[in-house]
Structure formats: C-alpha cells, structure tokens
Length: 135
Image (cartoon, rainbow, N blue to C red):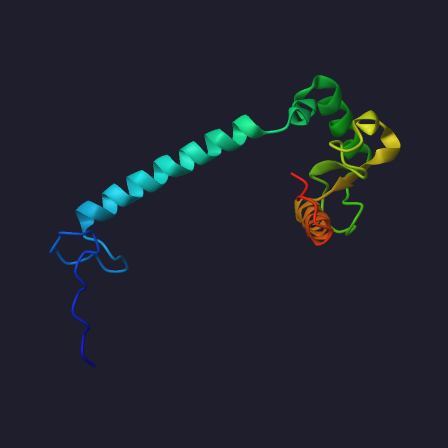
C-alpha cells in the first residue's frame, strides 16, 4: 500500500513538512500549542472572575461541616443507591433559594455521576424554557 507523502506546514510562508497527526511543522506546532495554552489560562481566569457571589457560600465553614456531616449520615447516593456519596447537593438550588442553603430537608447526598446527570437534566430543561443553564 502506498504511503501518503507528508503535508506541508499550514502556517503561511512555511515550506517544511508537517509532523504526523498535525497540520504544522514542529516549530509552528509548538507555537500554536503555547498560544492555545495561554488562551485556555485566560479563559479560566475570566470565568473565575465572573463566578457568582453565591459560590462563596460553598467555602464557608458552616457549609463544609454540614455537608460532611450529611454525607456521614447518608454514605450512599440517594439517587442510585449504588455508589458512595461524594457530594451534598441542594434539592432546590442555592442560587435560586439561598434561604434554604443550610436546611437539612433541602439536602441530598449524591455520587458524582448522579450529581452531573441531575445537573445536566436541569440544564436541558432550562434551555428548553429559554432560560440560561444553571452554573
């Protein structure tokens, strides 16, 4: 079977062959990777600056102690009843119901996959209604 000749680097003005699995030569691939890494860092930095003030609630000692105690009392995921609980979740989200943030009846112990699944379902429901996704 014939071997395909290497492509030329996609960077304008460069006539070197590209590296296997890439569209750029080694020099330009390194430059693009460095730019991409910087862009990701900037995106994460910007995201963290825009985080809601409500996220500070999850760093308080009262929440950390209540969350740990709740998971100690309910060590198994309340959704699937199979896995160990990793996360104490609010039934009614803290962002929309901050007054229920420390209410025992508004908590549930979930494993990470169930927490993500429930969060995705809430996000999809929100998008269908035309509202933004819960963060």
